[in-house]
Length: 491
Image 1 (cartoon, rainbow, N blue to C red):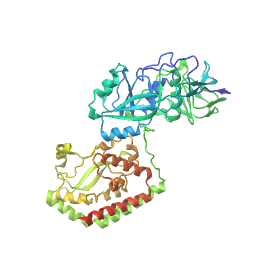
Image 2 (cartoon, rainbow, N blue to C red):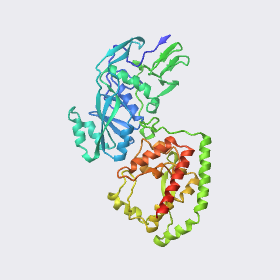
Image 3 (cartoon, one colour):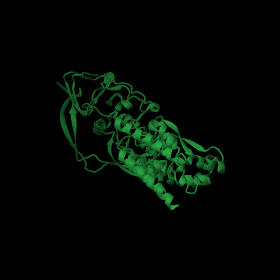
C-alpha cells in the first residue's frame, strides 16, 4: 500500500506564494496545486463567490463582472463568512466597509505532517506557538476606482489610512468578524490554509475548470491518474502529473501537489459565466417536495379564483373612478422577477398620475426608504383615488390574475424588480427560489420605522423562504385579512 501525505508541501521545499496576477506562472521553488500557489487558491475560493481579491501593491486586472472587491494585504489569507457585513453593506449603500478580522484558530499548538521528497508520509510533528489571537484588516467595496487605487499603495503603515481618507466619512462603515487567518509568507501557515480550504471548499471546480471529481470528494487534475480501486477517505486533492494507484490508501484532508515537471498553466476565470454554487452567506432555504409544491399551486389557483369572483364587482367601479380623475390607462404593469429571475408584468390598478415616473426623479431627495425602493408617506404622485385604493390594498386586486398565470403565489416574498434584487446579492437566489406573493410576512410585520424598511423587507422575505409551510401561509392570509378589516372599521 502507498500512503498519501496530508496537506503539506514536500519536506525541504519552501512555499513562496506568488503575488503576481492569477494568470502569472508560479516560481520554480513554489509548490503548486493545479498550477496554483496557496495565495492563488485563496483568490479562486473568493472568486467562486463572486468576490475579486485585490491585493495592496499587486497590479492585476480588475474584473467588471465581480460583485465586490475584497481589499487585502499581499500575504493575508482569510476564510470567513461575510453574511453580516453584506447585510450592512447592502442596506446602507456604503462605498467602503473596513472589516477587522479576529482569528478563531487555536494557536497553542498545531500538528503538521512531515513527508519525504516524494510527498510520502513519514511522521506527525506538533508545533507550539503563541496563544494570542491574530488580527487582520480587510475592506469591501464595489467601487472600481477605490479598488484600483488600493493596488497602487505600497506603504505598509499608511496604506489603510490613505484608503479610508479617499472615501467620505458618510460613505464608510466599520465591521468586525471572526475568521480563520493565515500568513502566506510562512510555508506551514500556507499548508494549514490549504488543509482548511479542502474541508470548507466543496466545489473547487467552480473556478478551476481543468479538474474533475475522480471519486467522491477526490478532485484531480486532468493530467492526474486516480485508479478507481484506490482507497480514498475524506477530501483528497490530486495535482497535475500525480498518480493514485490501485493499492494507494489516502486519508484526507490530503494533497498531492503538482509534479514539478507537469506543472500546468492555471485556466482563466470566466467571470461572466460564473454561477456561485456556495455563496458566502446562503440562507437555509427550506426544500419542499413535488407533492407540497403541487398542493401549494392548487391552493393558489383556487384562492385566486375565489378572490376574483368575490372582488370582480369592484373592478368597474375602481376603473371608472380612475378614468374620471386622471384618464386612461386603468391598469399599471411593472416588470418584476419571479422564480429563477424570470421577469413578468406585475399588474395593479393605476394609483399614480400618468407622469409619476418623471416626477419621481425630482422627489428622490425626499425618499424615506433606506434601500433601493422609493417611499414617501405623503407621495404627491398619488391621485385621490390612488390614495384610497392603496390604503386598503385594492390596487393589488389584479395580481390575482398574475397568480393564475403562475407568476405569483398568494403568499411569498415581496415581488421586486431586477434593480432592487441587485442590492441583496447574498439573498437574491433564496428570494428567487419561490414565487413572489400577493401578501407575505413583510406586509403584515413591517413597522415603517425610519431607516429600517429595507432591512425588514429582506429579513421577513428570507424568514419566509427559510420556514415556509402551508400553515404559515394560512397564518399570513388570516393576518392580512384582519389587518385590512381593521383599516375599514377605523375609517
